[in-house]
Image (cartoon, rainbow, N blue to C red; front, side, top):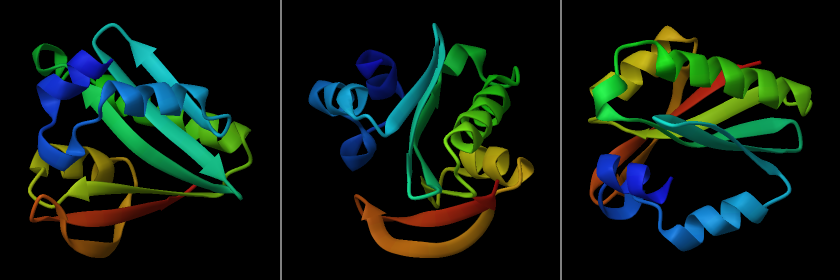
Length: 126
């Protein structure tokens, strides 16, 4: 997972091996994995956070991202979440299109969050 993540993210957005180890041991976190894609989320007090989602470049455009987001929603609901949020780099147009196409809406912005690039905060009712 760390290798796939590193191939698709840079700078502050890239997770270290230690970050993955911490997430895998977090009782509030969950992950959904495939050979070519994965996501991590967690639920705290009926609010789900989509922490990261990665689809290998070679398999993008095949509906894998949408399927992962559907699975995230199902997992979050199963854990009694009623709302979800995520942060995405403002310049990541493909991810933004995927999220808005699956019902996520902009709720705020974090200035300079990703190595100088703004993060959009997106929310979705579950």
